Amino acid sequence: MPTYDSVQALVEWEVSTPKPHRFVSSFLVNWIDPETTTAMSDQRIKVVGTRGRFESDQKDRGVTLVVDGANPETLNPYFSQFYPSPDGRGRVFRGYGERSFRRFLEDVRDLRAGRRRPADFEGSRPTFRSALASTAVVDAVNRSLARGGAWEPA
Image (cartoon, rainbow, N blue to C red; front, side):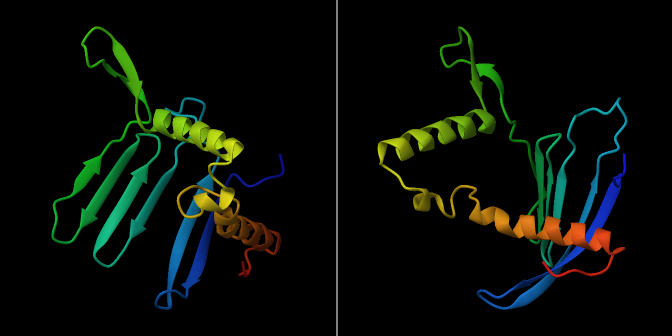
């Protein structure tokens, strides 16, 4: 198949609000795990700042926070799992996955009933507008690959 197995991209960002500044992010993307991998998807993000670090591991559903002046925290908000029911006679299905599906269905119901408008979700839900930056990065990386790795504006 004529495609890349792995791509690494550096993206230079310029943020103008509230105070102008620049930063660089590095992306490493590949799809060449062996068939014996422990998960169909292994996504991670690490944000390193001057006074702390945030790491998220999608496969293990873990989040690690390391911040100046505080002990490191490792959170593991399970996507969903069964817990003992409050009455102790059964199990209930809980977790952020179940809540996010329920929230989506409630949002659709509210939109259809006219109680909410799409604009009401700006800033609190993913939107087509919020996908523009990542879409621009993917497009710029594709153009860069086509030009042998040349820098491309997004």
